[in-house]
Image 1 (cartoon, rainbow, N blue to C red):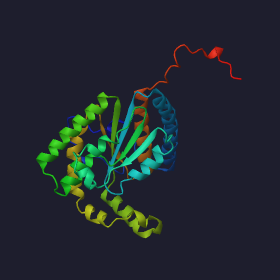
Image 2: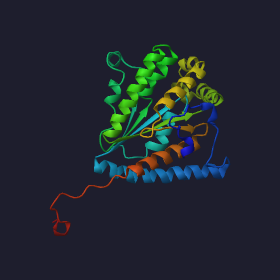
Image 3: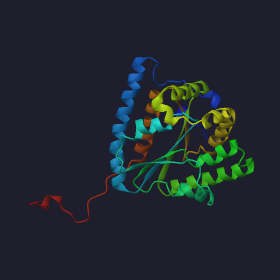
Image 4: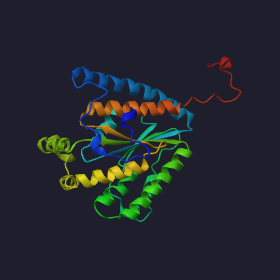
Length: 272
């Protein structure tokens, strides 16, 4: 799994990450079946650890999902996180800021949605939009973008120090795969609601997005809050890898059930 982690202190080149890759699984039907079975097993483990995390109430996990348009954020959430107990798992989506949000510091709306103790929170897009979309469209210059990156690093450091672990995923698809998925949305009436004409304009800025993603992940993939580039052309590979890495992170957190109230002797409790 370390092969997918953005290395600390080294410049990221997305061109060296193959979105078509299926390793550690084979490309045939047996590999696909193995990946799906692994995902199910990891989710079962995640569910058990989630219960301990919720009961313990001392730690939290923040999962960040970023991707190009059609990259599979929604599908990943459905496949990996929807089986978890919704009482202890929340999803927050960050779209274009409202007028109220724009009147505050760019991290203001993010602060309100970070997980409380005992929770798993998934960000569908995130605070990184403010150093990606804003740069692509020329709303901020390089100097301000660097300032925002420094603030994000400090923000995530504060979260980790207060007990919130962070894991960040870039769901990496190819430009050809994006074309296929956009065409599917046009051809399938049940997917028409997903189609946004603006996606076609954003597609023209593909190289600019990749450049700024590379810069952002290079600067912010730190040991305490790592980025992982997940090959996402094959949904079954993507889901297996994300579930495995989240499960690994939760296991490392090792939450424990709290002890019973002091002085309570279960052997002497009599329920009539």
